[in-house]
Amino acid sequence: MSSSAKPGRQPVARKAAATGASSKSTKAAKPGVREQNAQATRDNILRAASKVFAKHGYDGGSVEKISTAAQSYDRMIYYYFGSKEGLYIEVLEDAYRRMNEAESRLDLDTEKPIAALKAVIAFVLGYYRKNPAFITLLNTENLHKGRHIAKSLRAREYSSPAIAIIGQILEKGIAQKLFRSDLQTRDVYLMIASMGYFYIANRHTLSAFLGENLEAPDAVAHWEGFVTDTVLRTVSV
Image 1 (cartoon, rainbow, N blue to C red):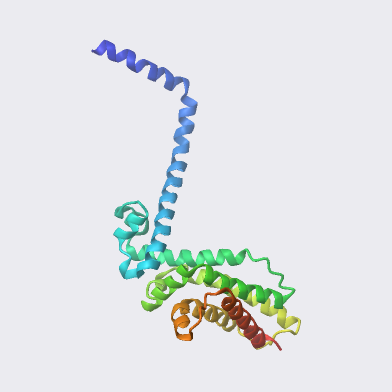
Image 2 (cartoon, rainbow, N blue to C red):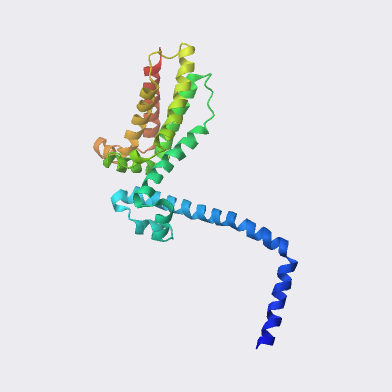
């Protein structure tokens, strides 16, 4: 048996010697592959958690539901995020981050502040409309009085760019004597965000209350026009 075992091992040894360089490169590549796989697993859990929390809320969005939706394991959630709350906070952060990234891709000409401000308004209202899960997540967190997002170390990072964009537009408008000089950027930001948020967050109950479909294209276009006109009237000299 020992003599028959030796020949079986020899080709493996010769192959290893002949491909020593490729083996080393393979070993060197493995950490990168592992990191990519780990990141893919983490991202998959994050996406699944976003859907589960949006559908079931924080209390109803159990670890089991999330791991099932992600086709993963409960232990992986604890491994990557520490706890259900840690995962939920990252879901909220990711929602803000994705909106910021989308807004940063806007092609704004601040030398034309009125057109730029109109573009920002259209973006915010359009983003809320196209991403109702974002609104649902914010509703859920507000029901919890913001206690989870208050623990985020990145929340302020995600609000700053959005406010900064509006600030730049207002500065140009003031310099061109188109906008009032006593404006506060945060007020204009809150005005746009609140008018867009309220409409989408309450579209179902308001549609029943008002007896009209607020999600109909003509209703959406009318509201965007009204918001745009209201903001411009507020900021204009």
